[in-house]
Amino acid sequence: MCNYCRKLNYQNIYIVKYTLRIVYFTMLEKNKLKEYRERKGISQEKLAESLNVTRQTIISIETGKYVPSLELALKFSKFFKCKVEDLFGI
Image (cartoon, rainbow, N blue to C red):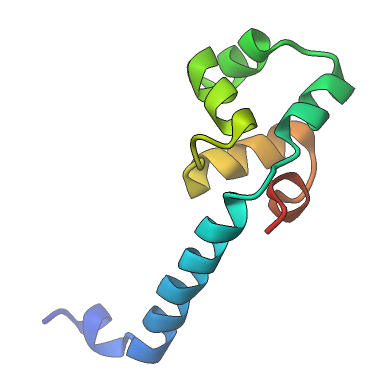
């Protein structure tokens, strides 16, 4: 086992996993992506191009059929200059 692995606190890992589950279930609720996109006045296609994803991904997230990865959620928050919590209701 590496030195880094020995230093890990397993209680913290459990909390992170538990928190990610809560985040996942919370994000299944309605998000505000469409509202933020329309407020900024851009199309789904332009947003998709800006974030290097497909338009279909944007549609799926807006309708709640797809939960974005943490990386993608952070890209959205950076693009709209808001907190991830405000955008996805975490």
